[in-house]
Image (tube, rainbow, N blue to C red; front, side, top):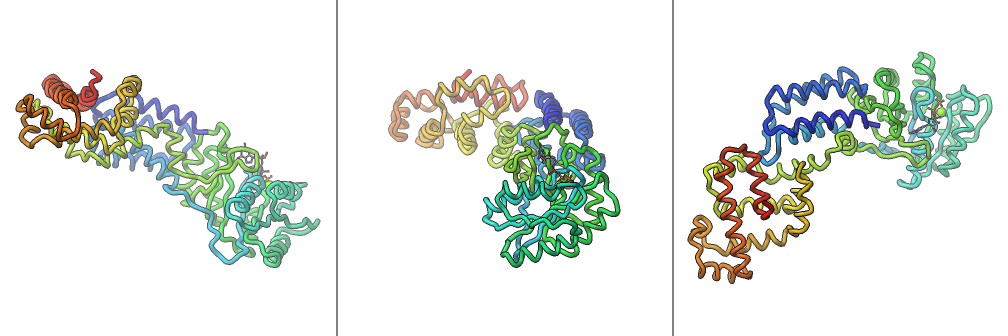
Length: 450
Ligand SMILES: Nc1nc2c(ncn2[C@@H]2O[C@H](COP(=O)(O)OP(=O)(O)OP(=O)(O)O)[C@@H](O)[C@H]2O)c(=O)[nH]1
Ligand SMILES: [Mg+2]
């Protein structure tokens, strides 16, 4: 559903990521583009405005971790913000009351109420072991009640027998009684839709709600509705009060704006999404997952998360400053290695870095993993503090001693000495380059890939 928006955001970010340093003008330009992309995806204007405003505040106030490019940092910010907009955490259907618990389904005509009632019934029965009864209050559209009956059969749940000529309130009463007497856990009330929101529909829904006292009133909304969806949601919420949203046709090629606006406009969480016509094409709504589906940059997001855990901006700056002076002793190497180890080994980290894909084969050949890091760490730890600080001291007999201490061959010690020497040499070359280039080059060199 979000393919268009996703494509646009990805374009914006890939341009942003190519730049080493972002100026305020770069950020401003990116924000403008994100704003347009959201509007084109049919996200409601007030929602877009809020989104951009708070994103800017965050972008300006966020310290960029040095091992991460500013562009990557922006990706992470937008990702988190999207998830927040969508509601942060998955919200479950509230069934915490004495059974039978009533859940009422409301929404415009054709939004997917009856289908979703069946889907939800199936889910409650199979995933939560609930005994479910469904009842259709749609006495207006011909065969609407029979439609729900069919759906209930498929879901293998109870369906209130149809009595011709009954009014919605009478059906509601009978359904509640049946649910009580027959020991049902949950009663799902499928209501009639209208082409447009009208007073009559709202009054009827209000009366049904008053009578049945539902624990959840689910607004079923079609994600293809676009800008209108927001007004619909708003009106339903103001008039009857909804407690959750089911977004249907998420499998379609809608632009996704409705999904992004719903939560903000109603203040109520999207709890489920319909992803197809079949009865099992129904999923829990997980904001973080949808956000990363939209951005399609999960790797970068997790990279930034991991890096943030390990390297504080201050630490990285300090290290970079030392490197700038052309100094890179074994203490620096040990420090860098430990950080990489925390990040799941060099291999996993390098693969996550954009533009490092071509190094993947080499990495696999080099068989770089935690074991190698562990071995190198052992070698460095077998050195005396003085040797770590002044590697030039390490002569033949010292090498032998270090190898014994670390339980490795002398060649292994020679190799790491060579790496340290190369790093040291490189630091001088890197003086002219930016910090980021230095860090990346440093890592490649550490692996002997240069
Ligand atoms: N692709 C797709 N189709 C859906 C989804 N949910 C519902 N539909 C289809 O949308 C159409 C209308 O669904 P209904 O469940 O009858 O909608 P309703 O809100 O009960 O309609 P009324 O009772 O007339 O107001 C049907 O053809 C469904 O198969 C979905 O998540 N994805
Ligand atoms: Mg229906």
